[in-house]
Length: 114
Image 1 (cartoon, rainbow, N blue to C red):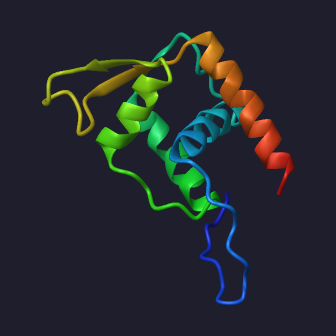
Image 2 (image 1 turned 90 degrees about the horizontal axis):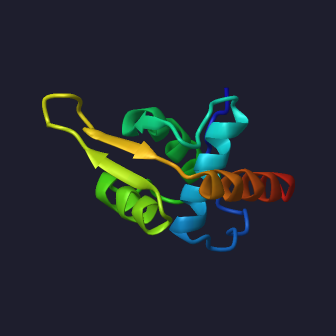
């Protein structure tokens, strides 16, 4: 289990990372933990832990749900909105094979840089 930590006063700040890169990294993290990503209809809730871990890793404040959904949509993910009574976050996400591959490559590249 990874424990997040805040940077200390004397640490040099990391280079700023675009939120889109953080989201792609999170999708790669989800896959690296052994979960299938591409072509599945995943509840948004299943991906939230990966988004939190990625934000923590890059010291980025966790974005709002709508912001994450907009970024996923711009990356080509299919967003399906369910009725509100289905879940707290009533969205289902379908990630394409190409986006899943990009996420795995991004995760691998950025994880090895640390």
